[in-house]
Length: 246
Ligand code: CAA
Image (cartoon, rainbow, N blue to C red; front, side, top):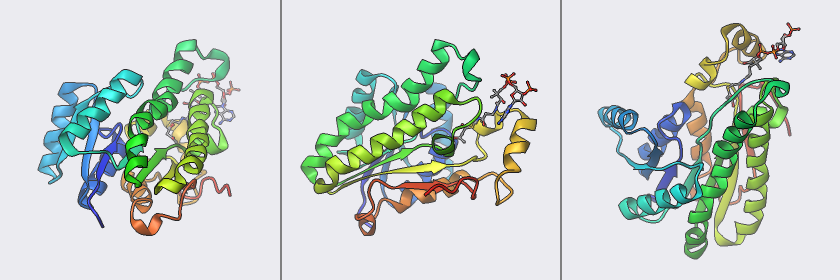
């Protein structure tokens, strides 16, 4: 497989780390963003100890200016971005009748506006070079809804709406745009759900367990090679059978 430059947002998180490792392991040059210097330094030391090189560039995906500077910083270090994985995301779970404007706005900004902020500065280069991969990490809860996640489900469903529009606009330019919709994965985000609530959710998963970050990284990597050039606008569910939309 040709070596490409990949930018994975939120790469220091649970799923993000596994995506960085998988893409680096496939020979791609990988970069991610960070906001907290101390956390990022510790993460990079661990990645190096595990045998992976990942470039770190400071930047907030929720700000258009910061996202553009982040992309230019990655280009300066590694070259033009061929693969963008929009993975950064947060939760602010609460039932809607209690949801504050801040809980709504933070989730929409970090999870959905970020997709505009990050994709806009890379798309023209991909079109000019006639090759690109844009992959959104959405969620099972964008497909089926989730009690306590009106903000998150709206953002995640919006991400796939973005995917299927951008896929149409850019198909002629050798760019594919796809979504991976993870189910419940054993990350800090899911472990923050109260234990008794989480146990009920796991009971609804046919595989009888949470997924692993590596299982999501595998789904992301699927969309990258030349053989995947015909696959665009897809929403790939990786959820242990918890939701089987079609
Ligand atoms: N369906 C129906 N009723 C439900 C329910 C459900 N799924 N979940 C909770 N309820 C009910 C409870 O039984 C309870 O009912 P009673 O009042 O009659 O006893 C009531 O809702 C509790 O409502 P409250 O508004 O008081 O809720 P709360 O403040 O206690 O907490 C919550 C609500 C924050 C939503 C909590 O239930 C929760 O954390 N749920 C999990 C949300 C979730 O799945 N988040 C995913 C995070 S991980 C992630 O997002 C990654 C990914 O992509 C999968």
